[in-house]
Image 1 (cartoon, rainbow, N blue to C red):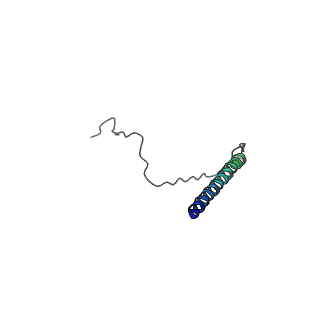
Image 2 (cartoon, one colour):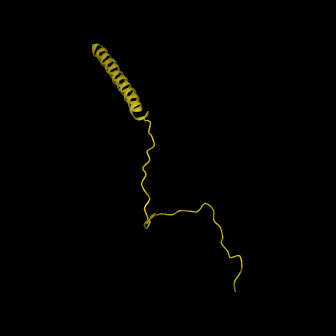
Image 3 (cartoon, helix red, strand yellow):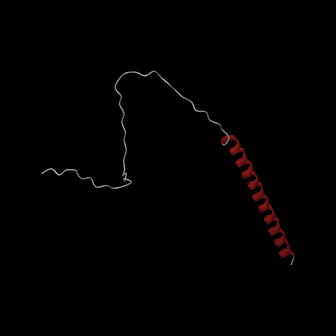
Length: 84
């Protein structure tokens, strides 16, 4: 009978310890979320413009892409006048 009571007491103690650990983790999580939101969330960014004098010369632009790009609508292209 005494062993059963000791087992019950140890189970209650471990349950209380587990709840304390969970409570501490939740508090730390809330505090870290608050700190992150204050440091990352309230940044006011200003727009910066960089200008330069225009120069004459050859303008070279290249665009690369891969994959399929489906059209929004499909249309059949036919000539207005039939040429024989």
